[in-house]
Length: 462
Ligand code: SAH
Ligand code: SF4
Ligand code: F3S
Image (cartoon, rainbow, N blue to C red; front, side, top):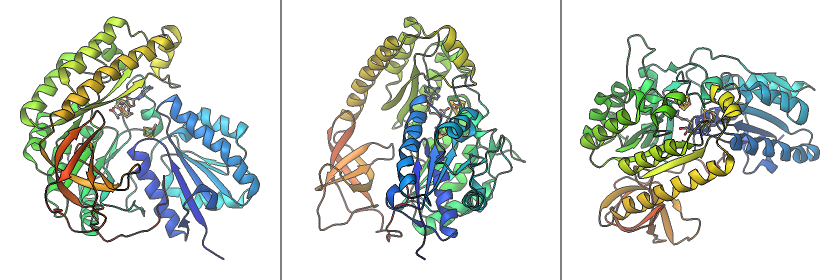
């Protein structure tokens, strides 16, 4: 019999992407092979995200579509995993509307995938196994990483911050740090395999190590990781402004491996809104943090996340957000309309004091307009500068152009000489043009990294 094939559809953040790599690793061990599309698969895993209503709707829509595939091929196994699976509302919806699903498991027991799959394949009923809370950190799980030189490494799971709008503490459980040693070993092994762009992951990486004995912190960990030969770029995501320590700023400023991209989600500029969001900082303390970052890391590329239309947000509150954006001058911002999430305090307030939808949309548009202008100006200021970029692939729109990224995730397009394979190489470029969302440049020297052997031809994930 030919090997069964799997397809993993991943929604949400990098933590979900990393979980999908671990699921793929477990499936490889079971003798599965990656399928190129869902139509070629014997097993489809939908790794879901619950952070906003729109993410959930995408997943529900996709699960609905899969009914047709299942009708055509009854031996197809469908599994729903990830953050939505942790929500009782999703389980109720699946049992009522999606009998085509064979297995549901959550974020805390993805290491059980092999046994759960066997159970589901032996059962006529939908197998639902979701742990309410997290067990101990599980080390040494197999993993099937994407091709290339970028790798994600978990350092802390869960989140204890309970921002009042956010579902993540409910879907990912309490904070649990990995010990430093297994993280260092993992990054050493990755560097030996040729991974040079390492991102350490957590919902709040600045909380790293507070639960370890003895206590450790993110700065300690980054200092250990930057010593590893072969690591060229070291990044971390996501960081919370609340515990972004001066020591961490100093360590980043002094490092030439920890990238000078500082992502500090602010969410809002109004103090009353920040208080009700439970963010535990004020506009003033946030601006002070940004000043200290700019002082120690003068070439920092700053980015943020902002929510508009939080319950009770007035025009004056929103103006505070615009004012903060003007003062910080972010390189880019991820902007969201507030989406009520079941079980969270803000969802109750949304019932009493919602910002009307057209006002939410208008605020989002005004915020984006301001940010786009600032992003354009920030990019213009890079013209004439030299940047090291990672060549990520041939541009989808023009096969004579390479699409590259700077350490701060800015896209740079450079001309492609078909005779030279620069894929996955680090190349110096000079910036020659700038738009709001991308830069253009010319190669300004030979690649600084060697060619990386292609490891796998097929990508199992999207
Ligand atoms: N741990 C990260 C955030 C992860 S979620 C942090 O604290 O920065 C990514 C972003 O989604 C958040 O920063 C926030 O801007 C947005 N977000 C979270 N919950 C949301 C909600 N209910 N509605 C709209 N946006 C939300
Ligand atoms: Fe959500 Fe706040 Fe935790 Fe970020 S820090 S994951 S926004 S609760
Ligand atoms: Fe979404 Fe879960 Fe990440 S809710 S943003 S996939 S932690």
